[in-house]
Amino acid sequence: MAVIEYMLEKRDATHVRWIPEWVGDRGHWYDAATETYVGWLDDVRDYYVPDTVLVLSKENLVQRQLIMHSANPMKKQDPENPGLENMVAMTEAEVRESVEAWYDEFITKNS
Image (cartoon, rainbow, N blue to C red; front, side):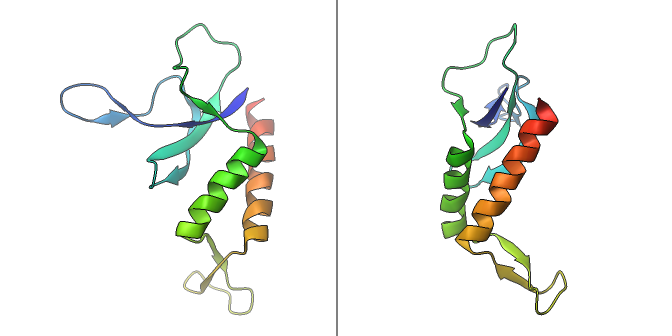
């Protein structure tokens, strides 16, 4: 079981991009700077997976998200003025806490 970072694949001459079929629980945490997503990879498999796939520990994922946050801050509802139209930037501590909780839940869900 592994949390991974992956890119879409080009399938044919149409340049249509697809999610690799070997990626499970896919499409999380898109990073526009690197055009990568976060997904799941089973430990036991009888199919090819490129050696270049990056496995993310919890801290690797936190650091990835903090880099993204510094370029484009993650947002939350303003606690003093609730409503979807009233969003404020999260602190680095809030991003870390949120990503760590997401990672733990993602591992549990896919194990």
